[in-house]
Length: 139
Image (cartoon, rainbow, N blue to C red; front, side, top):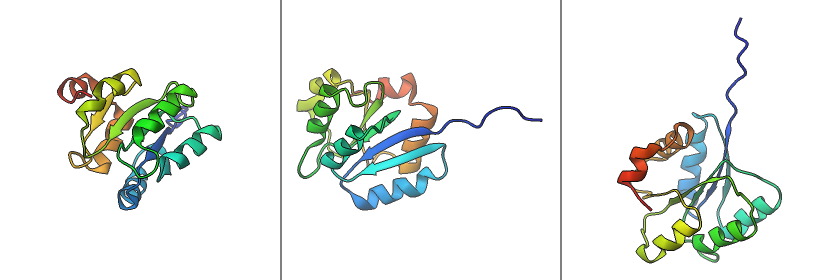
């Protein structure tokens, strides 16, 4: 008789204004032990977090209309909304001018959207990005 409890799902907040990409992540999340919550704007993400949602991981686009990803990061950190969440920038535009700011805000990594499929990113979220990822893909 198997008495092991099922693996607890990782709570992931995806913040991206690209609704097509968000739909791909939702579809792919079904394959993983992930509870995916999505927000299509920075404002919506902050509303979710201020409402008490505590994610294990946050995947965040930087270039969004309205509140930018950097502004979201600052608010999340200032308000201590997800103090233990693993933070990953998920964007096609690597903004070198923000690298130091990203580090100060606790960003663990930058993932170019066009570099990995949603299923691959979610696989890394579940299994860990590992030291090899951080060394070859620094913020």
